[in-house]
Length: 73
Image (cartoon, rainbow, N blue to C red; front, side, top):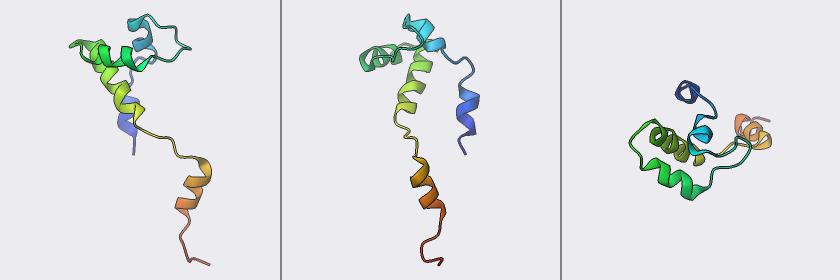
């Protein structure tokens, strides 16, 4: 389903290197938005990072509940 993500991220950690932020630290939202305005590869990576911020990881319990059918007892 989300196979395009693995293809889109060819160089993990490169955005941190481009922005000069250590890999373990989070990139501040203001820095990310400023980088997204650029027209080079760093801007593309920042826009992808902003897009991926909106994705939410589903918890295991919630995923298990959604896989079972209601009323199947």
